Length: 213
Image (cartoon, rainbow, N blue to C red; front, side):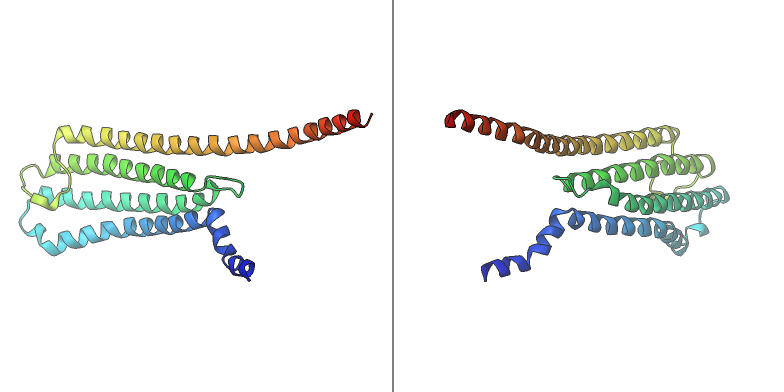
């Protein structure tokens, strides 16, 4: 009775142990991030138009804002492709013989998150700062512009974005290396046991033969 009761839940434990419990939710998260990034530029454009900002800014700022919208659309498309493409690769981050299954998935997410945010901040911040520094420097747009607009920021955003990408990749590779070392160590230990087992058995047979004689 007890064995049947525990066997009923066995598929649940197997589902957790084989990595699907960690992989599938992350794949869903990747899809959600892709959709949100595709919709974000449309939301920004709607909020800007609905706020009536075009009624009181100069023509140069209007031109800069239209170009900034195009930049956001490009970044949204790029981000959508990144997250949607990476959700397919999450399946390849785990194998059935891996002992440690959570680390590869989390490290993959950290790497993707760093690449996305670093590229978004570096490219988007640089281009939008450049546009409003050149065309909208005489307008005060308050909180409508989520980035600083100055020559210094044009330089700082790409540098910061690059450092974010590198940092995310470094953290991800550290976790991935730890998981790889642990999995390979486990495989090596198992292979050594397989190699040593015949030798132990041979020694035992030899000892028994000597005792008989």
